[in-house]
Image (cartoon, rainbow, N blue to C red; front, side, top):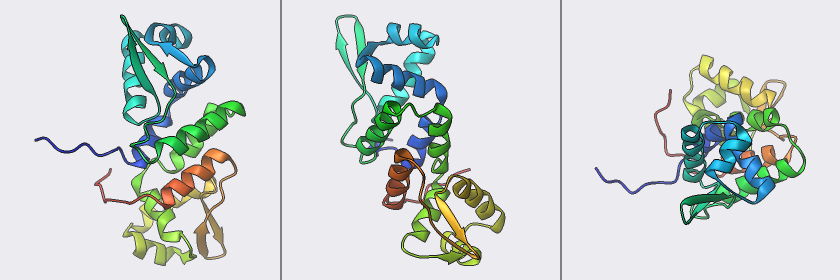
Length: 194
């Protein structure tokens, strides 16, 4: 069946970002401006097939664009403006690159919102403080799942706890700030997730 392809949800883009290989590719593109697959392959020491696959994923998520030049496909870091998250996300990554942010740190921020349920928690807390029970009612998550997701969000400062109340967090760097803002303002269509 032919469905209109919707831009990937934020959590999926964050899942794509949370991988060293893909960050290495973006960092090399940031460094050089434009690179072809062969150059990227040599710089990152990844096989051609893998390099091509990873680049395709980054392009599908609106973070890089390509153009053809004779036999080569040349990649550059440019956001696909048709995807609402892509421009602010790419700008935040570029900021991380300029400030020599470690991949570990970027992956840590990205994994805060690499699951739709965590985005729902952030949205439930926007503009209010909620108890664990209220948060469970607002999101429909079981206590075990809610605890698991809250732990991820709390350790990354995307959610803060004050006594018995949880509230919207304050991530410590630009990427985190951009991600929490995007998460809070994304429209969630409930997608079944593992």
